[in-house]
Amino acid sequence: MRPIAIVQNDASDGPSYFATWLSQRGLGFEVFQMFEASTLPADLSGYSGLCLLGGPMSANDPLPYYPQLLDLVREAIRDRTPVIGHCLGGQLLSRALGGTVQASEHAEIGWSNLEPVHAEATSWFGDGKLQLFQWHGESFSIPDGATQLLRGAYCATQAYVVDHIHLGMQFHCEVDLPKLRCWFDIGAEEIARSASPGVQTTEAMRATLEADTAHSQRIADHIYTRWAKGLQG
Image (cartoon, rainbow, N blue to C red; front, side, top):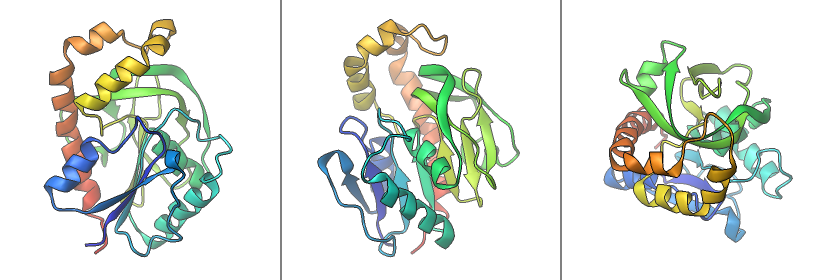
């Protein structure tokens, strides 16, 4: 199996549980650390899948590597190389397909309960409680040809699928305890000054952090298992 290409946009937003899940299953990966001026691959012929991670930047920012990255996403769509986008990654996937990224109805930081809006959602997320972690102020539109899978109370567009193999998500199913504790520290001021009803206090998030993260990772297991079915050899 060829490795999975993982695009990391920010030092504090690494692959975390996604990398753990891949390693546990003997699936190789290569991380392109764009914050360290990594060079993206010229094409995806050497990779079985493409993962796009999050970051505090906007999908609309004029970052120098965005045009090539969007071209790689479009190549993946054309060749049916599975793409999975987490938060900013889901926004970039939408942009590559002609969608838009704009301010979310409400900023979200913390755990939110989502609900399915299409029958295909069960195959991706299971049929249990869909409580997942959010940290975003912008959101994507559902691009033409995609199917919306989930919605939320504070942000309507939460997940979509393209051709049954490419998944865009507004939430962070890749979180683990070290990542969340790091985010709580570096994002304390942002949390404190927010007036959004979609933002929880750090104290509330820390109170049940271990149990909530374990639940999130069980959903992530379902997501990643479904996504990995489309990986090319």
